[in-house]
Amino acid sequence: QVQLVESGGGLVQAGGSLRLSCAASGRTSSSLSVGWFRQAPGKEREFVGRISWSGVSTYYAESVKGRFTISRDNAKNTIYLQMSSLKPEDTAVYYCAREPYGSSWTDWGQGTQVTVSS
Image (cartoon, rainbow, N blue to C red; front, side, top):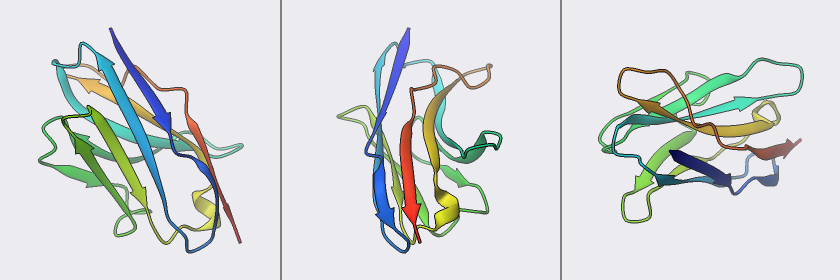
C-alpha cells in the first residue's frame, strides 16, 4: 500500500511563488510516475504535470508550462511542485497521485489548497 500526503498550500498574491510537497510512503517500487492535478471550484480535475519515478523525465500541461516545475528528492521520497508567476486562475485544490506500471492514477492524496489573490 502506498500513501501520498500533500503539503505546502496557502494564500499567495498574483505573481508570487509557492512550493508544494508530496511525501510518498509504503511500497512505491512499482511506480511509473507521480502526477500533480488540480481542481478548482465547480470545475473538473485537471492534469498539471508528471515526473517519472526515476526523476529523469517530466511533462507539463500547456497552462503551466514555463511557470511550474516538478522535481523529486529520492532520499526523502518526496515530489515537489514549484509554482512561480502564479495567477488567480491557478487557485485550486492540488493533488498528487501515483501511476503504477500498467495501471491508471491511484493513491490520491488528500489535497492542499492554493489560493492566488489578484
